Length: 315
Image 1: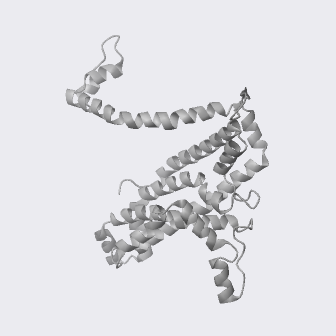
Image 2: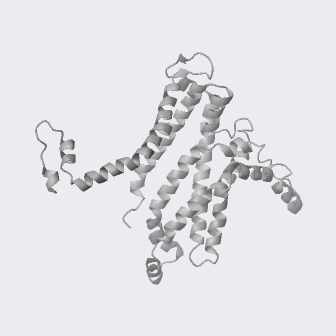
Image 3: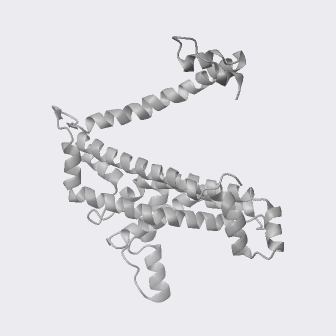
């Protein structure tokens, strides 16, 4: 315990203030510099994130048309959402997208990162190649996949030429539309997690892998008991970020299917967009946005609590 920790505050002086006053001058100066450098970021966070979030919460309690008189409703917008079958369906659609997309994204990106080990020739070229879809504009990627999926497109033509059968109507079938959106999204987004996992795998000491191999451990055992514990922090980061972004999916279903057929691929963010900018009901749109915010925060909190049981920071 340091001398500072044992210093008692004078009568009438708060303990925190007394502790700050007892800090060395250099530490107090560094604290002031840190505050100056953090001020722009904190200002931007307050202006562009916290303030709009608080405004959305306030608007969600009103009948808030873009034009016209506003009327206080309390929680009526939220009760309307819960009783709306369309909103329940878009929540289900979003959950289905997340359940399909997140595990497949992690498996594909981790599998490719594991395969692309140091002994693979052209490793850097493969890394660039796998990351290109991430850098390509989303709209351009979606348009290409739309040409691929549509009747008479590349998939349909290929199946007719090779096997004499027609491909399913991927974008016009309620059974195939969501898997098609998931497939396109994985192609678009796996490159980011691929780089995260590649960097994590590069940090695994080769000496430990070689020692395990000398002791008779096979490839699966080396990955399970040597590699896996060392990359769990990266896995936690990648799954958390992927889960958050996947709940906010919008461009892929909006461009590929417009949320159809029916509402079979409409997501929560699409619902917010439609309510706000098509039906001009900002109150209901804000309420739906806050429902999404609560869902994301709740699942993220569960992830942070659960990571204590499987993420290893001590290796």
